[in-house]
Length: 239
Image (cartoon, rainbow, N blue to C red; front, side, top):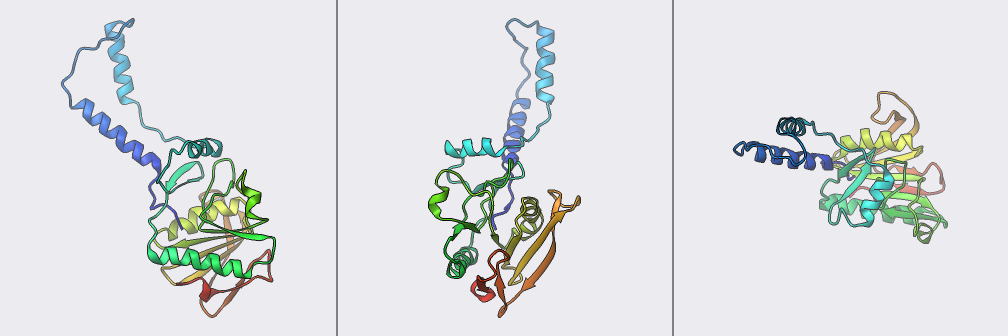
C-alpha cells in the first residue's frame, strides 16, 4: 500500500529545526537585546529556547481534515495513521496495475448496493484517516459526498516496500477499528494475504491484531466475509 516510504512529516520538521539550530549556532555571538527584559534574564530565556527539545505533534482527524481543506498537502500523498502524518511509498507500474486490477475484480463480483473506493479516505477513528488502495463499502458514491465512510466490508492494500508497515501498523490499525476482512496483495511473494478475526493484543502497534492469517495463490478463489456470494479469483488480483 501506501505506507511509509515512510517518511513521517515530523521528520521534515526535525530537519528544518536542525538546520535552523546549526545556522544560528554558527554565527558570531552577539549581545542579547530585549525590550522590557533585563539583559541577564534575557540571555537565560534565549539559552532555554535554544535548548528546548523537539517534540512531534500528534494530530487529530478533525485537524487533519482542516489542513486538507486548505490544501496544505497539495501534491503530497499523505495519510493520517494513529495521529502521525505518513507519506506514501512511490507507486511503480506493478503497484498501479494491481490497484486497478483489484478494483475491477471486486466491482465485477459485488452485488448492487456496494461500491469500490480506490485510494480514498476512511474516517476510521479520531486520529486516523487512512487511504487504503481499495475499500469495499455499502451504498453509492453519492452517499459520501459530505463525509467519508467510517467502515468498510473489505480493505485491500497493495504492498511492495510497504509490506512490513501494511502487515504491522496498518493491520493493527484496521483490527482496532473492527475491520473484519483485510487483504494484502503481496507483490514481493506474489500471494494474497487474508487477515481476519481481529482481537486485542497489547504487543501490537495499536493494541489489536488479526489472529487469523492465510496466504493464497492462483488458482484459489477468495470470498468476502460480509458478502460470501462475491467470489474473486486470486489470479485477478496479481499482475
